[in-house]
Image (cartoon, rainbow, N blue to C red; front, side):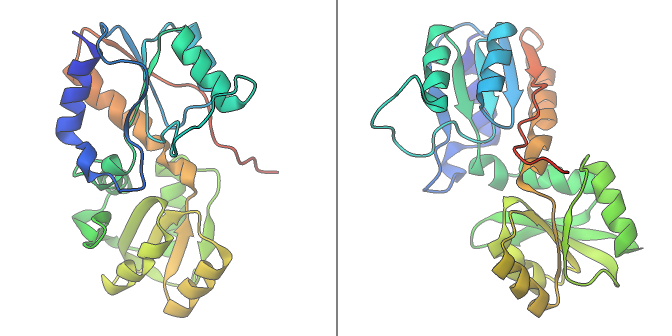
Length: 254
């Protein structure tokens, strides 16, 4: 059992060609032609995650967010990314990332969000970009809905844009930075749209649309860790899969 066997199975479900052109998915550092022993699953690749990987003696990291989006013209060990690359090579750790291909694929990020939230009659929200989902729930007051999703997604807080004096029966969602898809959410008849990284001016536009937007933050995509762990751990019993214990959320609440 080599690492390449795990990735072949994974890419059968989340093909790399589903990724957006600007994205950098697949192997980031290392090789897949080594025996699969321990695999760490994480949302982000940070120095703390690398230290965790070294301490746990893993030989592959599977992340959602790529370590590198753009080509590097130099690798300086004194920089955070240079330190990461140096230590990955030193400890023979491969990094593989599945980003927008995982977001768009059937059974990927947005289907997982829809499952956790409890949406029914789930459909593709943005046919042009092939991303986002919308579906129905039993009608509930929006304040109760917000409380429910915070619990289901394990979120300390969310930002709410628009009316909080309404009932919710149709919900749209696009993980990560999905602000531009709110127009499709409105067209699909969504009462509420969940996404992250909503800017001030986009929030004003949402208010003008009469759409309530709940900014769940980018780090809500941490559901990737459990989902990929469950998928691969069930399929490859002879490999030890580990869920990262590092909280990579860069935002702190005071």
